[in-house]
Amino acid sequence: MNISAEEQTCLCGQTLSFESSAQVNLFNTKSTQKVDDLQKGVSTKNAQLDTPIKLNYQKTQNWYALRTTYGREKKAYDYIMSHGGTAFYPTITEEKLVNGKKRLFTVSRLPNLLFAYGTKEEIQSFVYDNVNLPFLRFYYKHIHERTKIKREPLIVPERQIKSLQIICQFEAGDIVVVSQTIDKFQTGDWVRITNGNFKGVEGIVARYQGQQRVGIVIEGLFTVATAYVPTAFLEKTEKH
Image (cartoon, rainbow, N blue to C red; front, side, top):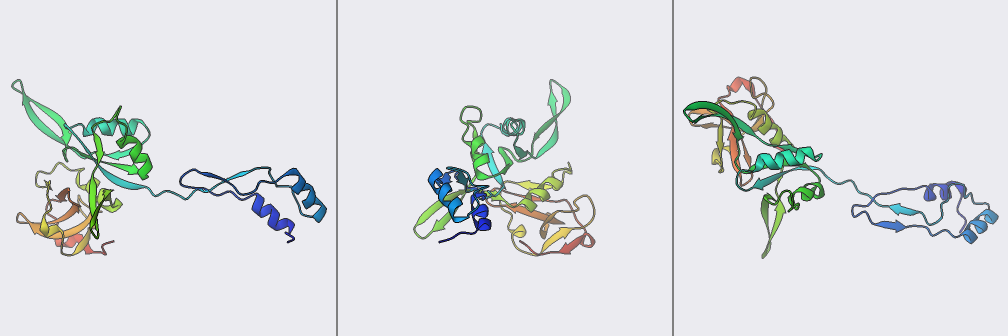
C-alpha cells in the first residue's frame, strides 16, 4: 500500500501520552525500510529510527480530604506546602490562659483534618510517605457494589472548598462547625450568597439555632454553616 509523503510525515511526527508512563514503539523503522521508501517516493525527512511514542492522558486534579492523628494537621500542611503541593488547613484564633496570662493561639478549626489538591497519584506521594508523614491518611468513602463494599478516597467538590475557605476567613462566634451531619443542610434550596461577609458561598439555606444560615455538608465528616444571612443576600442556583 502506498502512503503519501504527507501521511508519512504526520505519522512519524506524532506524540501521545500515557497515564502509566509506558512507552510503546509504534514504528521500528529499519534502514532498509528507509531505502525502500525513498525508492517508492515516500518522504522520510521527519522519520526517526526506533522512536518511542508516549501515550499520556491528562490526569484529573481534585481536592482530597486527609486525616491526621494527634493534632498534627499543621505539620502535614507545612510539609505538603514546602514540597510543592497545594493544601488548605482551616484555622481559628483562640484565647487561652497560660501561667495566669492571656495568650492567642492559632488552632485547627477542623481537628485532625485538612485538604490537599492534586491528582490521586500526587496526593498518594504524601499519604504513603511513611518516613515524613506516617500520621497522614486518606479519608475514605464506602461504595456498595452488590455484595461488595469498595473504598475510594473522599473527593470534595471544588466549590465546597471555596465556600469553606470564605466562611473560615471569619472568626464570628456564631459560625457553626460540627463534626456531624445536620439534616437541615442536606435538603432544601441550593443558594448562592450575593452580598455581605459570606459573598460567594454556595450551599443549602436553612434555619438553624434560631437564624437563617447557609450550610455545606462535607460527606460523612462535618457540617459548616455561616452566621445569619438575610434573604435579600440570597439567590437560588443549581446544585452541580
